[in-house]
Length: 325
Length: 224
Image 1 (tube, rainbow over the protein chains, first blue to last red):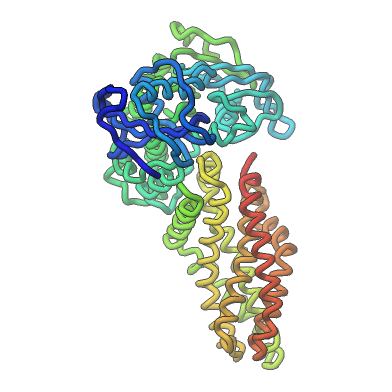
Image 2: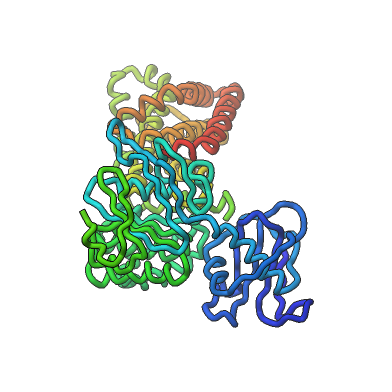
């Protein structure tokens, strides 16, 4: 793939942005020479590659802001080769605006979703909408169907009836696109017992297309650096949960799905989860949390309650505890 | 990331788990040895009968070893929901199939070296008359067993009685592989390696069909 880095552009604009663009189909990957997208907007130095179709740069209109873009660029990926370049910074802005069109879709939009396991219904005609950037806490008693709801949104299981979209993609037809953009952290940590903590993260990084070099930093971030070389088999449930959080931190998904993320964690680890949620909020990402932990609901922008497979009207955040079953 | 890199990552992970767990060395190899010895004893002192049936005994030992190896390979995926992690990862599911099949093939081929040597030693037969063709038979036969096993391993992962269901599903489908492998090995052992060509061709065709089926269907079988 040919690359070009430009400190300035043909149209006279200045800055370090380098936009290498083919044409649009919505799937984009951004790279920078260092492999990371810097936090300071002035230092932003990225290359943008966009998937086919076959023609040159699309006609782009509109504007965008760096704060939105930086988040968006971190979390998006591409698979094909670049074919032509954007030659001005303005083009780059317009492209990013076009990329952001998908943001007009709600993060989650389920319509009359049902799911049964054998004869037992777990979800009964759930209609549920979550806007982009929301942090929604789902509460309810055991067996209410909360985890099933999250697993359907993550496309780990399919609904028995009903339709819906996640991040603008159909629950069934767009499964791969949804998976590319979501991260499910569940009570099953999905770790390999005979791999070390670091090996688990490196493998997750590789299959998610993330630089495996980030694994060490993620292990350190969750306070497991001292056991990074030890097999997961000897880890406590809390340590496993931390490692699962580290794996989630490797990525920057558009939608975080956290299933009982506070269960079995000590205070310090709970703060890690809080940091993950707050960081996602700050970046404008969407978070859906299933939890029994009433002490964390201040993080929510909305709380919904589930009972016996049904979703009850959203409870307001202020005084939300009164709405709990 | 390319298909090949994804497959290599999965195979590398499976082999690392195998090296750590020593499933092949600690469980499968002793089982295969015990099986061969039991077969040998069951034929009594008639050495000629044992010599005639040695290729069949060898491949039966390989088949049962492969069943155990597959169980080991998918056990790691099922321990803490790791298979769901693979399902939800933006990875080509065909690459996952090839990676898992590659790791099991490597394990089985290592075991087969020991099984071939043991068969020769126990039954007093020379299996290494035409080493290249014997290696080709072992490789093609193993890939045939592995392609079917990797495909159905994921299907039976969720089954309640998977230890029983898996061999029941795999045995009928791998019968052509077993027959072709046994016949080719017998011809090589008998000093007619040139006649084994057609059986090797059959094995190659079977491998191609089931590898293609695996790459295509594995993702669908993983889905809920």
